[in-house]
Image (tube, rainbow over all chains, first blue to last red; front, side, top):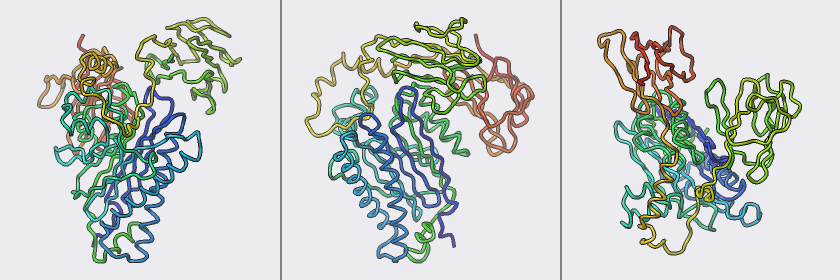
Length: 275
Length: 230
């Protein structure tokens, strides 16, 4: 009976300031044994963006780990997946409050905020929550797709037909996000659930990657370096920097090595993962 | 913003924007620019930038600081000056006086409430043209074309042009390496397999290897030659 996530995922993370910016406002977190991967791209003057993204990854990861432990201990009602989904929404709200309060209490952090993309792998599924323009991509076979849609002015313009995909590549508004963590008292995370297959490669990345590197180049690199995730992550950063490295660039690459179905009891598997 | 291009043996290592009024250079970790090499003093030198002018000061380093081959204590940096510390070279590039430089705002910005910008403005060909030129700003690198010619195996004689960013060589599952086409050269990296490729008979380590004209590579039992097309 394989009811453990242990060994099901292989994860590599990499974050780099790029060639132009003096500081790195991106932040990443990954824990393969707990099926957790988080990426945040901070914004705000001085080092406030750095603070916001660090708060997002650290607070969210620690709160989720604790939540899953507690849930497992109490054999909570409801399927694991639904609980994970609820937890994500609830704890992202808490992260939002924490950053918002820090930003309003301390003037040096005024106006700081961060994008966020967080994934939890559980029961042969991936639950993804995102806010802003950091993305989750999936490579399955030869198909490479974005599983998240940016909360950005640009995406809204594309959706409403004001500009085409082609024009969008040259838009001057590409870095304007319409939703961010820590900017308003309340923020809504967009949450989706996708089925996972062995062999899938998932990529969490900041705009510093997809602004600098074409999607088919990203796909090509993941295909070629799929057997060696550390190299794949390094290669993606290198390509962004070779193309100018105009922004901080961060990636989390997750490969699914084998299935990880939920076993008998709803919480038995969660308990075993988060132990 | 003015910057320094750090290189060694002609290989560019890093581009360093002069972000602070005073940027210290040295071997120790607290320096703004750390060069971890025994020939570099703990606190070796500093670059002080006031408005658009930068000055280099040698901080009584053991091995000294050269600018364009001359030993200096204090030096007013001019565009294109080459600073030498041990085996390391740093080329000073003054800030370009371009209008694009003004737009040094945060890349990711929050666009909150408020109306969408006028569609007519977005469609303005002038603005579109500016955006386009900015998008293509990182000038196309002038890298010579290169190719691989197979020297052994069933396809001996065949030529493989290296036009893509990444080209795979070898047999999947057995031994795979990749040649990455980068702005400053072609780099061979081992990806898969217990056996590592060799270049001119020397076994590669885990690092990317910068290929030179006429290097002979061996991967999965097949010999091939790397050459530049001039």
